[in-house]
Image 1 (tube, rainbow, N blue to C red):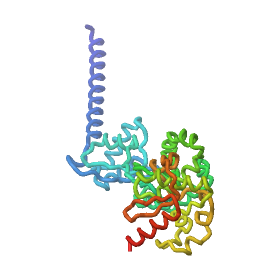
Image 2 (cartoon, rainbow, N blue to C red):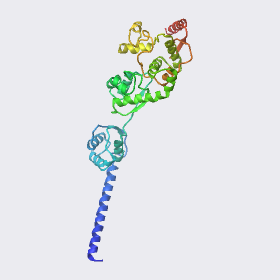
Image 3 (cartoon, rainbow, N blue to C red):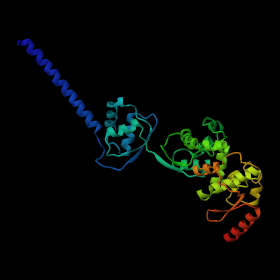
Image 4 (cartoon, one colour):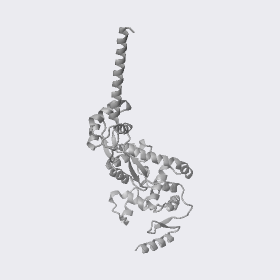
Length: 339
């Protein structure tokens, strides 16, 4: 081989060696950066990454919480893997034992901490807003104002001036910072899914969705046990057919609003509000709470009974009567029993 050829070959080999060495150093460095852990073990820590946070500011927040040991190394690891996407704002539950690669994966996939929120049957809009506020999901007053906004209700295809009755009772998993509009929209969407299965029964019963929800909300408030809901429904259906007033105490209480002190008086029953079913015939203008599935079903399928009256027994159940004379006898019996 000629001397020139040997020199050229040596140069090529040298370049290859240097390139491989550089690549190897890069791979080793990247592996080291992505595999860094603040601690070999550790409990989960909740860290809030604000909207618009950079890798550097996120690294500082994580380091302050003790999830990463060096914010600069973490930011460098993030820049090396920047093709995986941006970091997303939110509340994250992370451990010091997690690698930088795992933490970056959480931040880029938006795997935020979810909070369980139980919304029981019979909660009003105000109750629901308070529960969401207690969980830190929304500001209660913001939720109340938005839930009473007719334009927002119309956007969600709720044919009522408020979302009262259409925020479906369920156990939800919400992240913080989701936004009030999104949270309430998801709850109405849950109602829509439940109603889709009931719509054929409503059509068969000759009831609109609004009528069914209003009646179901009254049934929900009156019933102490689900088993009595069809009987309570029968009482109200029978009264509506006869043109009798519903005389439902829960509607009166709802119409009183904050003025109700927990003790329903004769003066309260005489107070003229749109929700006073002692003063007005027919259904009230809107639902008085969020009914559950059992109450909705009962509103659409009342028991085959001719009852027109019922009185609470004091144990969560009711005594049902056909005639007013029977009802008075039951009222006197259970009132004396409570005394």
